[in-house]
Image (cartoon, rainbow, N blue to C red):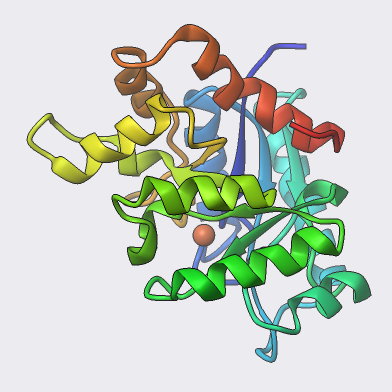
Length: 242
Ligand SMILES: [Fe+2]
């Protein structure tokens, strides 16, 4: 099978969150993803404990429907299911009950926090998940103020047993774009395990991967890029440790 990118952070299911508004938009996003070289998409609709979340049965139905559309583009394209889980204390229970979903049935869970959350709370929240046997992936790690230019804290999370996902778009920018430059530095240092598009639509927040890879190629070893773009996401799909 053709080796393609895995996009493990997407809002591509139609009409369930602030992502694709309908199936037509989903299909346009799938076409963009295909052109970007993405062959496996994990749909990660938002899950917020206590909020009115779309039931898992419905998500599975939609995922199957999107899978059928993807196969019309390429028979090898796969659409899998997960959630982007907004952290709260009841997240563990929701995961155990199956109302919140891990990534593609693995032990890996995509977790987000309020961007101004304290490091202590992020550390404690993710630590609880690790102790319960999950492998938490911190979604768009570049968004948290407590981690910005704090590599020691980033390393503390990694040592805790967490993985870090960065949005591919956060890497795009000229040398004058100090944030993008800093994000590229974090990747080059080997502190980022996954890139995801966090796509929401077919115009502004698209399922992109190629531009990020091109920018990183100038700065990163081939081995490192292989791990980020292929090895690590495949470990998620195989439910094995990184
Ligand atoms: Fe997201």
